[in-house]
Length: 138
Image (cartoon, rainbow, N blue to C red; front, side):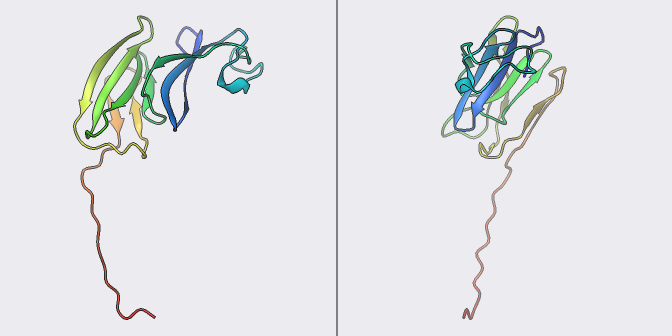
């Protein structure tokens, strides 16, 4: 996601490496494993350093809105999590809300309206399983 001022590109590296990163746009870049060359992203190139902005941000569980970047901060061993907001202008992180029910970290689904007033996410309300015996089996 590009910042509103066009100076930064925000990204999560991979599902296996949580964290929200940023890289400057418009000058050479060494980030992303040197995979980027001069590009359509305002001159992003292999050469610049990436910067960790927020730890624990998972792919599929963050979204950008006018107020900033929202994400679900999971707590190991607990259901749900906190919805956090990074104000890009001030670099301040605040808790925007809490999710009490279980969120499946392997099933990404998180979105925020442009004005930041509404959040949409996937929630697990119940788990069911059926055991069925078939006889005879040949």
